[in-house]
Amino acid sequence: IFRSQDEIARRLLVALHIKTMTGEERVFYRSNTLASLELRALGIHYAMRQRRAGLERARSLLLQAKALDPGYPYDDTHLAFCYLTECYKEFGPDPAESARKGESIFRETLSRKGDLPPNLAATAHVGLAWALVLQRRFDEALIASKFGEELAPSMAFVMGVRGHVLAYSGYPELALGAFQRALRLQPIPDHWLYKVHGMAYFQLGRHDDAIATLTKVTDDPYYRDSDLIPARTLLAASLEAAGQHERAQQETLRILAEVPGFSTADWCRWFIRT
Image 1 (cartoon, rainbow, N blue to C red):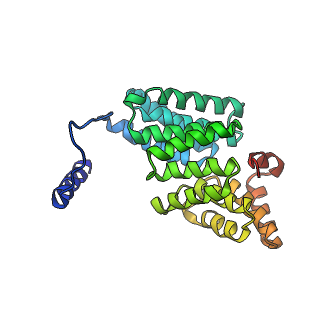
Image 2: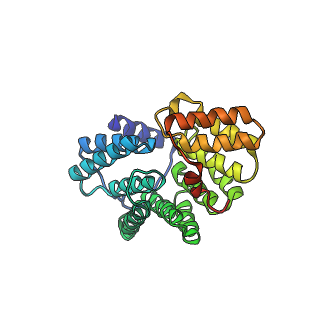
Image 3: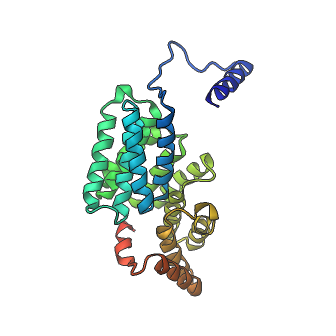
């Protein structure tokens, strides 16, 4: 498949007479281990669901991939995002320690600047920003996420995390621009993007827009295997604020059915500067 893709790309370049670079081509790292690629792809899939069992499975798969392909620079970054997910869930015994572990991995990755492709450097910058937000270090987070945006403005993930950092740091209007750009780049995004996009609308008091955005993820079977509790919590709050009390109660009951004893007081600690 990869050889076919390369040949198609080559023919397109020849047909369009595009000059892509000058000088010697630089290859940052090339994996020749098919097994590690399969493990890595599956690990990322489980991590993106942001569920307890999936996160544990993701870490195991990513560690196996790293063992098979120890020079591949992306595995540490994927593992760092697993640590950041622990900060939102009760997956780990110490969320603060998980945030520090994530920060440490991203900083170590960025210390290899000369060996990093731009997309990995951008991902590490926004990952670092995410870790800093979780530690309430907003000014540092905004700077780190801006570096990521400048390095890879056409990466949907980078723009999504940039919006995430802006929203949690108290700049929801700027966050909306980043989210809209991310959605243009990736029309079917990971579920967390819709959640934080809806949060930005909620922060601005645009409750109808928040409801429309959040239901894209809560009502779509495509996302049924993901953790939708944060999105449902925001949706319930938006429905209540919009005067749709019966629907708000229904969403609350759905949350309690999945997580008995769920407390909004615990979850709302993440509504920073709102």
